[in-house]
Image 1 (tube, one colour):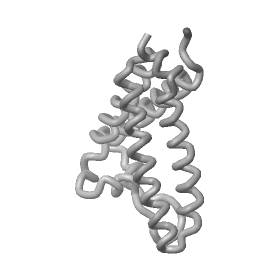
Image 2 (cartoon, rainbow, N blue to C red; image 1 turned 180 degrees about the horizontal axis):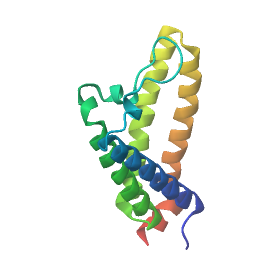
Image 3 (cartoon, rainbow, N blue to C red; image 1 turned 45 degrees about the horizontal axis):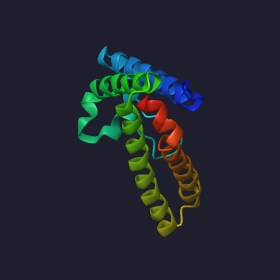
Image 4 (cartoon, rainbow, N blue to C red; image 1 turned 30 degrees about the vertical axis):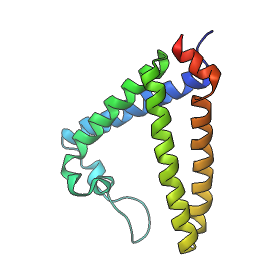
Length: 143
């Protein structure tokens, strides 16, 4: 049995994401202020580096490490390594739970946008978890 097409797509997307994230990390380490400049619209604009809180000064290293991890997991998926399938499954499962918590928060605070987008995200994340745990996909990784 060949590689499942959705696994190929996931692996390529993970490797592309990792490549872009690594490049941003390197650019930041070389002195770029791109991730330290507030962007967006409205009064609540923040710089991407502020997401890392007290580790904002380490944004370049954090992105570089995350980028390399994305590339490794993407390559693991592409070569049908079981550890990569399990890693992606558990990451999606944890993110789905966190997204569901955000949906509950959105319901409690009357934030319809958070609720709708969160429900869409949970649906996609749950579908990906189901797919990664399907018998045909598991067998592709075990052969």
